[in-house]
Length: 209
Image: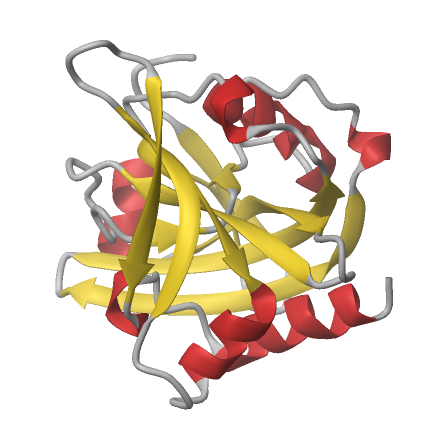
């Protein structure tokens, strides 16, 4: 990949306007496409767990917060299906796009500063996997851990019905470079602020599976 990334730019309703550099896209708040994939599993009682990644503290957007299992920008000329490469880059998962379920598109806007405006057209996919977290090969420049979060508990957290939740996961041990298992407690402020529309799409589509 070249040092300067270029993205296709769009209207909020997906009319293509042209291309722009990553820097220009975020400086001017131009709409651009992203790939989001949520990894999920079912426990013995049929309850859903969602996999969250913890973003690296050096990220310019939402450092150290818990985020979508896997996400990335689509480069100029790519469509939503091309984003499947992010699963291997970030998590070491060689997955065919046919193994994913596309659930829809959501437009989200985050104005982080006058010079950092993130307007994304999120293409959202689902992928079911029972793979143990210690077997993931994570991209340590992008994330520092992976955590299973019960979907029901997360919904209660978002509705204000609880103050925190407990999850099981792994984090990157800086001394060994390996993944160490842990239990961790999180509050709502520990998660990236996706919109109600985004989570409604996610929860509704999971409920239909």
